[in-house]
Length: 108
Ligand code: FES
Image (cartoon, rainbow, N blue to C red; front, side, top):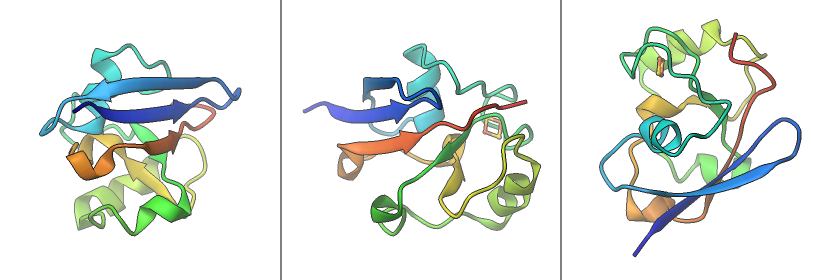
């Protein structure tokens, strides 16, 4: 069964992808050419250019950010929001089917 994740760009464009279980949401986005997820560091938690915003209804269904992710969330180019996460730290699981993520206006 596909694990569908939707990205909403800052200009309102929607993009749905089928993500692979066990990969990060960042790699799912990059592999599917989702513009707006840059991921300069390739998932090593040193760039903050994989910033996404999780809607409140989904936030509690995701594992909470670790201390390293929380520290890097201070480095996002766009203002940090309550639902801000780094998508390289979100692992795709079947429970994420239907997840909708908002993309920030900029990653730089
Ligand atoms: S890809 Fe660099 S912090 Fe996520």
